[in-house]
Structure formats: structure tokens, C-alpha cells
Amino acid sequence: MPRVLPSEVVAIIDQMTAGAGWNLEANPNVLLEQGHLGTVATVLGLAEQVPTELLVISGEKYVGLLAAMSALRAAVGAWQVENRYRLGMLPGFGQVHVLLLLRRALAACPDEFPAPATRDLAFIEDTELRESLRLDISAINRALSTSEWKAATVLAGSVVEAVLLWALLRLPEAEVFAKAIKLSGGGTLDRRPGPELETWHLPEYIEVAAALNIVDPNTAAQARLAREYRNLIHPGRARRLGTRCDRGSAFGAVAALEMVVRDLERRK
Image (cartoon, rainbow, N blue to C red):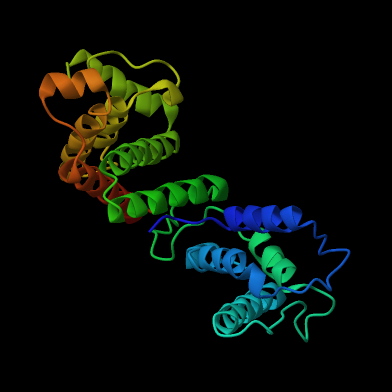
């Protein structure tokens, strides 16, 4: 089933009301009737497909959302058997049309929000970074559930990279670069990393993090596999190796992510 976003339902309501020439803010007395069955059923069906994790509203707006959807369901059911049923404003909600009530509630909902089961990453103090990474992890879980193996593989590798960068930035700069230079001199790294951590690549983050005991050896080994999986997004490499992103690469990359997060949680 496709993922429907709150903003998409809002856009459909706006399109519907504009096409009918209705201004529900100025004139809430518009009555919906049997001739509107198809359009109302479409709006209701889309609203019902909005993921629950995106319905982050509460209080009056949430009550309004529930009331509006219940009223629309009742109308759709009634119109299928008779044509006298009318629907406009709902008692108890003031001079607000039922469609406007639904629109206001959904307009207050985000199009992105981590699913409840998403790791909280409490060890990352930066709220903006933490929530951004949680959105990515939530997207990874959705990709796995819909068999979007390339998306899950790439996103998981990106989050591993971001989390390892965060961990390295918390250490003394001199210590991190001294270890990187030693690893490049010993052949563990193919190149000597530049002076700014943000310009490094995933292999540098993995090897330096492992050498500094930020992650366990098994975690580093899994992260190296995730790095190789992520390289499969390059068509030339995938064709040369005769392989591609699949269920195995996706779950392998996610395993690396889970192990890296676990190690960082232990260090906190």
C-alpha cells in the first residue's frame, strides 16, 4: 500500500474545494450530498492511509480529526443506500465545515516523523542531529518492510558514517589525527586523511573508530561489509562484480548500523 502523507491529503482537499468553487473559511454552510460520494470517499480513503506515526497532533485538533473522519465515513455509508443525507458543519465544533476540520488537523501533522519503534539515539545530545538520524532510521525500517533493498542499503551506510563522524568529533582532535596518520602509514588506510574530519570517507571513519576502540572488532568488520554494500549503488562496480543491492546487502548494512549504535550506547 502506498505511503500517504498529510500534506497530500491537504492538497486533495484544497483541489476539491477549489474545483467546486467553495471557500469553506468564508462559507462553512456548504452541504455535501450524494453527488459528492466519489470525491469524499477518495479524501476519506487517503486520510485513512496516513501512517499513525505522522498523526502527532493532540487535544482539540486530534478530536477534530477523529470527528471529521467518523462523519465522512457515516456520509459515505449513507449515500450508498439513499440520497437525502447531507453533511456540512459538525455540532460541537463551531462554524467549521467537516472538510475544513479534517484539513486543519492534517495540516498540523508533519510529513516525516520517526516510527515509535525507532531507536532513540539518546547518547547524541544534539537534538537536531539526533532527530534527523532517527528519521533516516525510520525510513530504513520502512524500506525494509517494502523490499526497497537499495534504499535501505544506502541509507544504513549513510547513518553509520554520520554516527561514526559524530563519535570521532567528540574526541581530542590530535588523538584522532595521530591515529589516522599511523593507520595510513601502516597500510590500513589507502590514503592519508585530510585535516578536516567532515571530509573523510566511511573507510577512514571505520578504521580510526576501531583503532580507538570506539567500536568493537566485530562491529568494525560488519561496518566494512556495509561499506562494500553501499558501493554497489555505482552501476559500473555492480556490473563489474556481477552483483547488486538485495535483501542480503540491506540487512547486512542495517546490522552494521545496529552494532555501531549498540557500541556507542555502551560507551555513553
